[in-house]
Length: 138
Image (cartoon, rainbow, N blue to C red; front, side, top):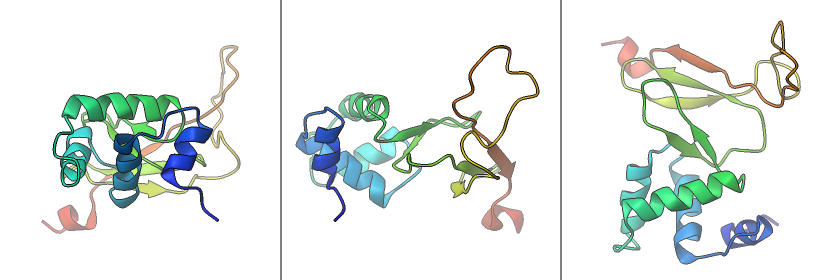
């Protein structure tokens, strides 16, 4: 049995508010979305939801490890629910479309730097840049 958004929130030590549950549901439906896009989607069922409230909830959910913030260079931050693995992303240089790519190889982190400078490496983020199939043919 899969845990509901409310169950996941409680397990992470957060109150299962209607707004947080709605945000998790919208992120399940629209992964790799910006805060403004998520706010518009939530406003369909919760018209009084403000962009600031969505930003606050995104911060809480990210800190709790329930969602992941993705910040490709030159683009607005996007959010996703896929947090249980060390996957990477493909970003279109033209339209900004973003998609998941399974890790290159091995367990997290899948890449090791030549010199860790004394750091204990916990994670590695890899972003592949190129052109999506829609932009490639234009």
